[in-house]
Image (cartoon, rainbow, N blue to C red; front, side):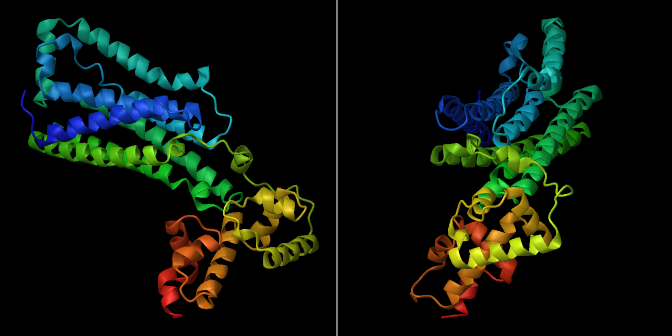
Length: 381
């Protein structure tokens, strides 16, 4: 069995997938169910790629009865990503019998394929393996692959919708950019959506007799997966809680859409509350607290969170997230324009005004001013 550069990359990916799976399964930090779900996702990828690797290296030609056991594992990847997303967003998420129904397609397809393949006999199994490795499989097989891809995409789309819903609600509850956006989770979903598109396109090309292109594109996919797994691996080592779900209070409340139709507040009352809010923001500067939430600010004003949220949304036409960070940016501009210490750095200003992420600070600052904090600072030497 000879190995080329692609094989070495492939084996490295498999090693990292297995390592991060073990790491997540054994981690005692964070939300256990979230660790298990995302660990199971990486395990499914590991098993699927292991099966593919053994097939491509012709290992199964010596043991044909053991082949193709991992070909349907992508049917579990979509549900695992979706359920993991729910476990991160919903505080009281539990794996129930109803959740297990998401894995029925895998059970059905896996059982049907194994029964059909194992009953085919040695000679027929060898023929099947040959047609697969030579990319001469019939069109019905590609149609089945399309079902797998569509199934995965549907779950990725569903997970993405959950995130969109969360972002809309969380922007009215959190002032911390990371908690309000969960960008790393969105990146994961988008990454695998791209991988699915590449894989589906690659299968179509091979069906159109462009067999030589299949293995080239497959090598690119392996390389992309290698990069992603490395990033996920090092993030897990540095910060395991990104895979552990949130154990914060009020998460479920933040996910509920704001409804003000039943509010008894009139315009005069709204204006009075806004005046109190603005006076409090100017006098006490609560926005300097990086983890400030709607509930905390409402308690400081002796208001119900829903009422404060309504006033901010309707009179300022902003979410809580936008409102708090606009104050932070104004404070940053003041410190950069008239600093007490001329040697103060942009990073020091960032932390002083309540941000804890440089990328978020730069993004929000540029959105509000049109330039980056560093560019703004250079205007006031």
